[in-house]
Length: 128
Image 1: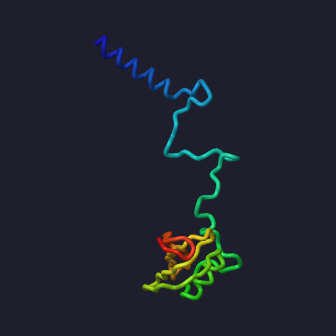
Image 2 (image 1 turned 90 degrees about the horizontal axis):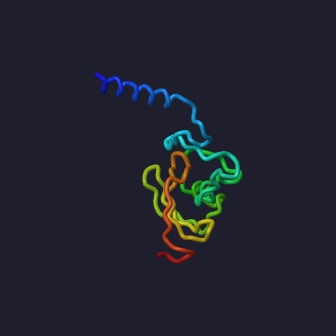
Image 3 (image 1 turned 120 degrees about the horizontal axis):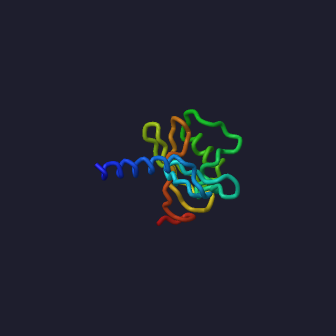
């Protein structure tokens, strides 16, 4: 019986301590699932795809596009030397030189006009 009351006391004290506020700053438990970077200079900067994700200057957003509209949209985003490879359903496959000079294969969703995929296939006019 004495062992049982000791165990109950240990559990009760543990529960009470768990409900108390932390005594030291920064001693709160880390919640990795809900982690957000602090505001200010520690916020993440633009990612490596920022030149490609930027909306076209003065272009319309969304809506169905054809191959010519996809070429104009890529040109407005800084792509050059654009050629349409094929259209398969609502998907348009193009090759172009990206804003950084790399040769890319771009997949454009014809229903929304968004870039849904991109693969680097070379640099300049040379393919890997």
